[in-house]
Amino acid sequence: MRYTRIILFLLTILLLASIAVAQTGDWQAVKNLPGGIKLKIKLKRGRTFGHCRFLGATDDALACDYGGMLNSVRVQYRRDNIKAVYLVHNARAIGFGIGAGAGAVIGATAPHPAPGTRGIFVVLDAGILDGAGYFFGMVLDPFLHGKAVYRP
Image (cartoon, rainbow, N blue to C red; front, top):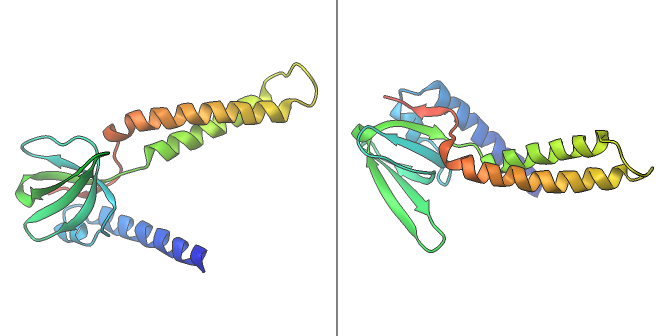
């Protein structure tokens, strides 16, 4: 039952994301986004850095939460100052997966000093490179964004 709910939630997010991408000039697409989704906001005047958690939108503004380690900051952006709203990829998870896959391939295809050690090298290389991939994803995450939800 739990897995069914998770799958339905993920399908809902994908459906909403595809609807939002199809309507990039429509503010209603922003208002229909589910709360808690990560967004990248670009402004006409001013700057933002990183991603925020979507709290909600009205006809005039968008509310976002920039969560920090010690405190979180709730910010409202006026609609007339918003240049674009983007959905966000999880760059850490993507980097982790790419690093683990590359490590497994390298461990499996590299020459090994003793027979029967291939499995050890697969696990070892995957473990090292998934950590490196996660780190690079963490560093690049604030600079990357996904599909546009809104562009006036």
